[in-house]
Each structure stands twice: as C-alpha cells, then as structure tokens.
Picture: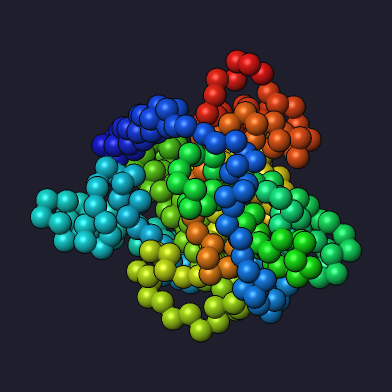
Length: 359
C-alpha cells in the first residue's frame, strides 16, 4: 500500500519538474504584437456551418450507470498513479509489470462493481448547447437563435509566438463563426462529476488504516470523471447535438480523439485561465443543476470533476497557447473587466514578460 502512495507522490514531483523545465524554455520565445497575431488568425468560411443541435439548451443526468461509462475509461493514467509506466492494455502483458498490473486491474473492477451495486459513487452530468458567435477573441453566447440576449461571454487568448507568416496564430474563438457574418453558430458547455461520495469513502478506509483502498477510490473516481466526460461527449456528438450522428469509432479511436470536435477545459493549454470556469457555471446554473462548486482558486469541488467547452467544427483542434505579451494581457484584462495585476496572477505561467517591469 505504501509503495503506491509513494509512487503517486514521486510522480507529482517529477511532473512539477517537467512543467518548470518547460516553462523556462518557453521564456526565451520571441513574441509578436497582438495586432499582428490577430492579422494572422485563421477564419472559417460561412459555408462551413455546423448543424443546429437536435436538442438545444440545457440538459442533465443525475445518475449515469457505471457500466455505460466503463468502455470510455482510459486506464493508462490509472496505472501511472501506482508507478507503473506503460499503455493499457499492453501493460497487462508486460514481462515485469504485467503481474502487478493485472492484480491492480482486477481490484479496480471489483471496486467498480461495488460502486455500481451500492451506489457509493455516482456519475452525474449537466450540459448546454447555445447559439454563439465570435466577436474578436471572445465568444458571445446567446439566449436564442435571434441573438436577442447575451447569456455570457467566453474570453479567449491568442498565440503570439513569432513564426512564419503563413502559420496561423490560433485562438479558440476562431472555431466559431464571426458575428459579422450574420450566421448564428453554436457552442456547448459541460460539467461532470463522480466525486461526491469520495471523501466519505476515503475517510472510512483511512479510519481502517487501509491506504490501498483509499488510494484506489481516489484513482478510480478520477478515471470515472474522465470517462463520464468522454461518454457525454460521445452522446453530444451522436445524439444530443447530433453533428456526427453516423460516427462509428472503436474505444481505442475514441481514446485517440479521432472524432470531430474538441472539448477544451479552462486551465488547459489552449485556454489557461481557470477563472473562465465561472462562465460555464453561469451558463449551466451550477451548482444548482449539479453539486460542483469552485474554490477561490477556481479548483472544482469535488476534485473528481471535469468541465469545459464543446466546439463542433471539423477544423477545431487542440493547441498550446504558449507565452503571451503584456499588450494582450492588458487587452484581455479590459475585456474581462479586471485589473492588470489580477489577470497577470491568473495567467502567470503564460506571461512572456516579468510582471511589474515597464508596466
């Protein structure tokens, strides 16, 4: 039991070092002005409208059967928690790691069966698909297709790395049709959780001095949350929105994200500002529609939760924002109605300058 706990801690330390090394390399990048970057934006032709959703607006599911989630679980990160490197399912047959991996996997299935049987962990989800348009680097989200009212504005950031003039400086807003084109587009938002029962279960096992089971619960809750996000995205693509109704992908292809559309999450490489989760919370009426709250630092509680956006366009793809200049940070602060220091704190890892210098 202690080996697994120590392996998880060692993994966290190693990941922090990798992140720091990466950030140090990024600081040497040459940046272009935000005006130049916007002039290098990619644009979607009006003829590439995504279909209107079959079921627009908000929806929720208070309990999704664990057996429905299991085919969508990516098990590779689960084994990493226990210090076992290697991809699933190949790791189960590994010459030296296979025996331990198989035991962990059998135990995981036993825990999942128990969760399903006594409903100690519940997978729940809420979502919404709304009319939307790009306005600069932001996305306006409307109450109806006539755009008679703005429900919220999602603020996004644009790459400023100095690259060839033929390379687009990407921004997530570019994957939504501009308001100036007079054609309404669509944007989705979602939040899922499987963590509401986790604290009580962990406390119970810790009280029994069963560290192995406590860590197993936490590791499986994380896998269930990610699996629920994958399952819901599949439902969105094939049914609720239905823009890929004829999708026929294997579980492995889904894990490789071979489908149309993306679901970037605030706090991740393309949209690193965690505070933008507040926009999702507003759109989905959280925590009313689902018991997930945000801490002061915008972490989700319960921890085994996932939230983000749905972009349906065939050209939508993930990317890394990288470092950005003070000109864009000032512009972003103005769009969000925040002071410069607050935004610099929110975007600290992405700043391509030292805060307070020439400010």
